[in-house]
Length: 264
Image 1 (cartoon, rainbow, N blue to C red):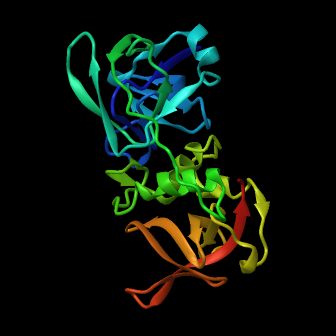
Image 2 (image 1 turned 30 degrees about the vertical axis):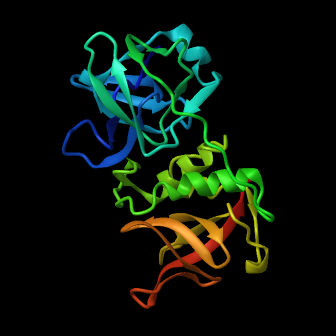
């Protein structure tokens, strides 16, 4: 079995082995994956963290040795909470950005080895979160991280502040508090405890929305009383009630509520 690890800011994951195929997700710097098949110029991969499948350009493969892949998921990792940080590739001396939401093992003496690539980096100072009389430290950390994506444009399959979709937003926000959820909203809805009444909703609960066929197509994070943070056009905060999401600018409901789940 062969493995790889992302050594670039992001790598596009396609639905099929073609650059014309739709984007289904993105690998972020530090994301590791298993290679399931090799098709000429393409690799069919499955991510190690949430077992999400897609195709990436074979030229972007940075091999991760099997013995390293076996322990990679259990390593203590740093997660980027700033919009981006800059790191330097050791061999080429090229500096490039790493986006918020990326995670990777802590550098040793400012040096990080990912597969066959070596990087020089200095991590930012750790963030501190103010105390809140009602919210827990975990809820405060979640809100602080989620707010960093506000105004990010919607991008189907995107996972960065430069473009992100609704389920990636939910997945990355919860990853920031060490809760790993699946990639898609239709998968995320299978996790957590159902909260039946709006009066019981709390900051950090996840709201799921369905279409006319009853399929879960959207998710967002409750961020306050009658408020939801979600990616729709761009990452925004809208009103939420037992009917769904109400957009004040449009003066209409845009998403029909199906269920609210709690994973915190």
